[in-house]
Image 1 (tube, rainbow, N blue to C red):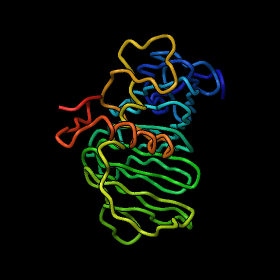
Image 2 (cartoon, rainbow, N blue to C red):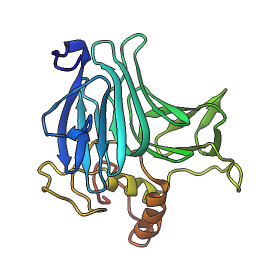
Image 3 (cartoon, helix red, strand yellow):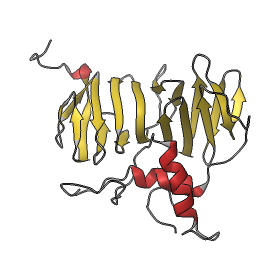
Length: 249
């Protein structure tokens, strides 16, 4: 009930950083504000938000994004998130507890994590998952199909390793099944879109990026398509991408 204190089991973490405008349960979000189970986080077109979960995992929302923290129990390592749209990047601590899980549910897929750093893009009828480090399991929901996959399929799930990606869609792709590792420009676009500096400005121009690190991305495939053209024109073949920085080594 509103107004009653939250128990420790219902506390999920806190807001670590943000760029206005962002909200928590329709109210203006604040840095260091506590996060609880079932909290709904939203960012506007000029907003970004970083959530530090109690187990040490980090979630970062880009602009025009929505995330619900359905559950996060650090002691038992039980985490359930829901993402309907937007951009999110995540660095998840390793699951070591028996029965522990870290899942992100989108409208047409479930992303299961053991302990990894991944990017996911969620838009209408499509979920794209790119693994930067570790391994991610992706399972289509309902009538959704695999449109593109460079991972390994086992029954109804796809295992995506570092450098690989999978696209789940509810609409059959006109070109059929494709195999493609994550293009460096696409990964870079995801990293930039969810970057939040340690001391963010009061406002940020749409599309502008800061210099934070160690976050996650779920975002618009349209924006990524633009990033492919822009970044590819600026990066040569000798450029080795560092996933924790907004530059090449």
